[in-house]
Every structure is written in C-alpha cells, then in structure tokens.
Amino acid sequence: MDQSDTQISADEMERNRADRTLLADAARRAGTLAMRHFRHDPENWSKVGGSPVCVADMEVDAFLRETLLAARPEYGWLSEETADNPRRLECRSVFVVDPIDGTRGFLAGDPHWCISIAVVRDGRPGAAVLFAPALDRLMTATLGDGASEAGEKITVADRHTLSDCAIAGPSSWFKSEVWHEHSVRPSRYLPSLAWRFASVADASFDAAFARPRAHDWDLAACDLLVHEAGGRLTALDGRPPVYNRAELRHGTLAAANPGLQDKLLAVLRRVEEERAARAGISH
Image (cartoon, rainbow, N blue to C red; front, side):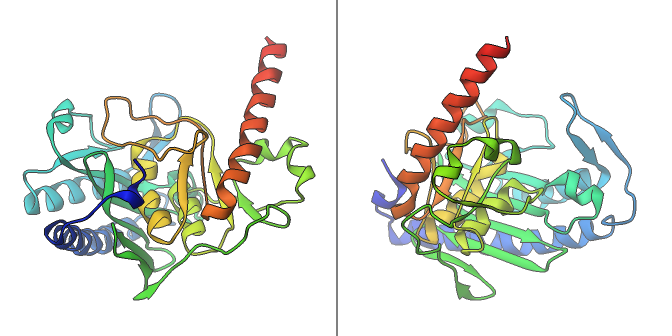
C-alpha cells in the first residue's frame, strides 16, 4: 500500500510531530560535534568493503544513540556505524540513522554531507530530519504534515516530461544512449545520497536516482521528505521501499514528482537492462 493511502490518527500525528522535534534538536547538536572535525583532517580509516569512516562518524553516532534512546527507550536502533542488533525487528518504531551521510565528501571538504535521522514505524518513515551543518540547512518532514525548511513548505518541481530535466545520479549511468533520446540534463555530483534525493524534495533537482545496494540509513529520511513534498521515491517496480527488515539493502531507486516518475522509471529499466547485458558480454 502506498503511504499516501495510510490513514493517520490524531495520536499518531502528534507522536510523529514530537519525534520530528526530537530529531531536529538532536541533529543540530550532533552537527556541532561534526563541524569540529570538518576540514580539520580527522582520523579516518576504511571499513570492510572499502568505504571510509572517520572519528566524526563515530562521535556523532554515539551522541545520537545516547540522546535519542534516552528519550525513546522503547524504540529500536539502526545505524550505519553501530553493529546491527536483530532485536530492532521486534520494535514497531525504530530510529534509522546515518551519522554522516557523504563521508567521502566530508573528508574532502565538500559541504554537501548531512546527518540523516528518521523514525520508521511499521516499515515506513513517520518523522525525518536531514541536517547539513556546513550549509546550515535543516529539512524536516512528518507523515501527513508536509516537508519544510526554515519554516517554509517545500515541494517537488512541477515537470511532466523528461526533456531538459535536471536529473542527479551516478555519472556512469548517464553514459547510456537512452538518456540522449530525452535530452535530460545530468546534474552535479553530490557526495550524500540522502541530500541528492532531498534535492528533489526542494526542487533543486527535477529527479534523482541511485544504483543498487543503498541501505536503509541512506534512504529513510529523504524518502519521507520527497513523499511529503509531493513526490514519489520508489523502486523500479513503482513500489516504495520498506524499512527495518532483515535485509537492509535496496535495488535501483528513483524519485520525482508523480507525473514524471513513471517516465523516469521506464528509462531506468532500459538503462539497467543495457548495463546488465554489457556485464554479461564482458564475462
């Protein structure tokens, strides 16, 4: 069932609003911690698989875990930088956190990284915050109550054809000739996947997509921002992601306004098939 079809009780709405306030306050305080390390050559190392992590990731993670679970001890916890505890699967409500989404950019001095926090309830986000401390930008969303930045509602772009659309995604995927049929405009690279999708919510981009293997913590907060800004973030089959499952990774995902989304998904399915065919030939 699409989230827009969900009926929200008054009690649920108030709980989501209270969670949003909690998340926003915690994100701002965590941002102060992160900024102490930004552009100061923080200690860093590589995780299994090669992705970078630094001392700022770990400090922010520890602060958020202590702060948020003290306020909501009955909630579960899922974070990129905390060893997964399967007890979260027994919790109706779970904090889903990426302490620093875009660590590569953080280490390179690029300001487009963010702290991503969501409360996922019954598999879908009910409250969400993205805070980009180096940009001093805070986006928030509550299920059924809209998305906003600096007290102003944000909405997705009102485009209904792919022609001349500003679309953000991995550069290698734009090498396909399929895109040239539609004259799209590939947009600048952002090191944070969450901020890439959030840039659809505030109409900085018309659309965005992500290659397979993004995790819950990359997506849960920006998913709600897009949804509450009037857009859709879905898999290639048109279904929204479900969070807090045993499997944390997702397939190819895309976000746009409802009038553009199906067109974008159709192109991405062709691109994905083309890439799969090429991979088969190379092997």
